[in-house]
Image (cartoon, rainbow, N blue to C red; front, side):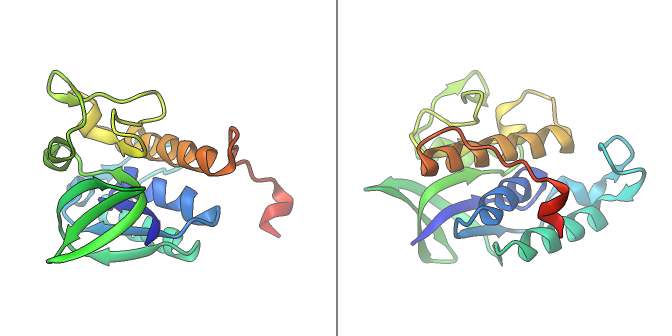
Length: 183
């Protein structure tokens, strides 16, 4: 059983995986590599002067893996709450996790299957991106109507991850590095 299962490898999913894996949680990301970032070029992403979307995703994947996350190719076809966590089906195999972070763009099918509450056409979440199902999070385009920006999605992934880390620590968790941390 893994600690955190992230479904989707765009900015939201990779941001979530970065925070959780960096802070010691066993994190697995499943992705089909169909992120909208392959059609994008970043000019409006803080800290990025100009970068092709595919190059951005490749850089983000490298960074996430360097902190210990496991990235896997595969389509998650179903998710369900089970006991103390979740069971996802990937390529006819079951994967268990304590926490679930959905980062599937505007595809809300897995959220519907999980039975989370919706607000109109979007998944209803708290400010921490948690859905009505405890320990299940939704991010990015699935929680926003037409506000589909990579930087917003990355922030959603970070918010979900910090909530997971706060639950694990039993108090509000801050991920704040200093120059000494980089040495």
